Length: 105
Image (cartoon, rainbow, N blue to C red; front, side, top):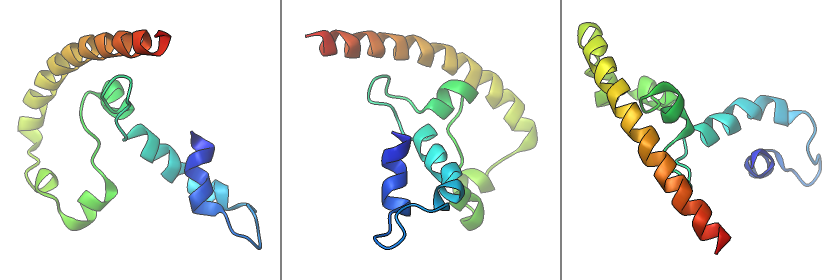
């Protein structure tokens, strides 16, 4: 999957791969971690940290989620997010089992 992410970013007919992959590696990994999985329906980032990732462009352009951030309210919402993460893990396990059964068929 990482190689599939690299190919459109670094392929050049004259200089096939060179060392551009080193520069593109963080971008490719970020895109994989923030893309929902077909098997579980959640992003890997969400399953690890318990909330959706904030994209760099959201910071650059002042997205509503970034502008509405409140330090004191963040602690309360973090507790809620941890509860949601437990539920999301259960849902992800069920979806993964369903996905694996479909693959077996």
